[in-house]
View 1 (cartoon, rainbow, N blue to C red):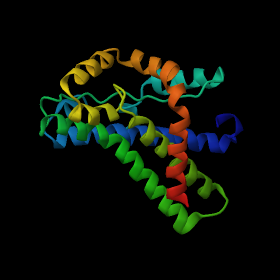
View 2 (cartoon, helix red, strand yellow):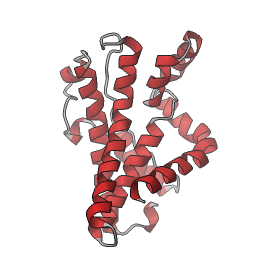
View 3 (tube, one colour):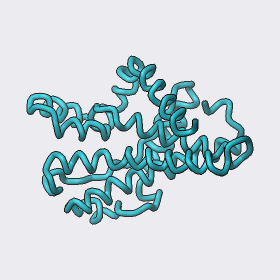
View 4 (cartoon, helix red, strand yellow):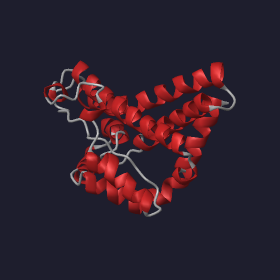
Length: 208
């Protein structure tokens, strides 16, 4: 994807990624605060300021290295900390905090696609920018809804999973960033085909 982009399109991609990640993480924080946990607020994460959500290693350096070696990049912002024991509705409240980020990406994609269909269908910079923004947010939505810890979709699975599965998921989640790297390098390749089809189906539905 990135090798065929013009310099202008690449700037649009990078800006779109920063916006998508920042709003995604901010909505985790806002939802946790709304449900009674002030952890993110006390740590200064209850904001749309990208500088509070971007990590120099996982958001900038790692994707650049992956692109340079010819691998598909993935972008990880600083996870928003929250205390599941302090939010309302127990595991279901934690699930709401988890899915708030990816659902926000879906809403952003839907709004951009609607603007495209109403005002910008065709060619040109504005049209291309809307398509890129939509595509990135759809990709973030689909990827983050995968129910593999610590991805956001796992929070939804936690709410309905039996206790033995919850304990197993907690063990995986304890690996943190290392778990994500293992998932991307060893597991994601086996599900990348279906994930790409889901991405394409949603893009077709939104953009027509």
